[in-house]
Length: 106
Image (cartoon, rainbow, N blue to C red; front, side, top):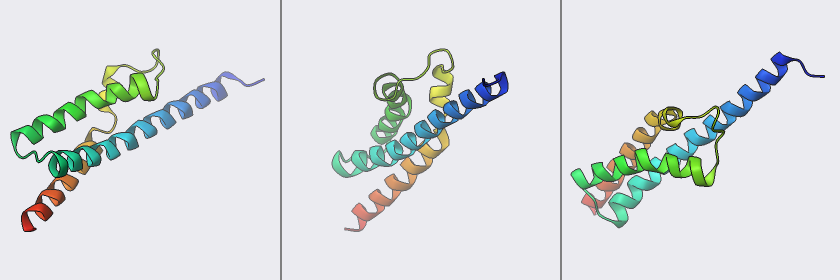
């Protein structure tokens, strides 16, 4: 029979796996949204900034509610938004800047 420490450890591992999954989903979402926004739609400047913010704040909730359901007792909107903010911004900026630079040199 497992004791309370083992159960808490298992719950923590499950939560960390969910956070890691959300982190990497946000990383790929940042790169793909920058690529689509610049390459296919042709956004530059403020429209690109609004595009980034809409994916930054909107897509995590779509993931959390529809694609990968979360545990309502453990997760709240702060955790959903907080997880992976830096990697989303980093991948968005790197891919967006590289795509823009390549398109300008062509």
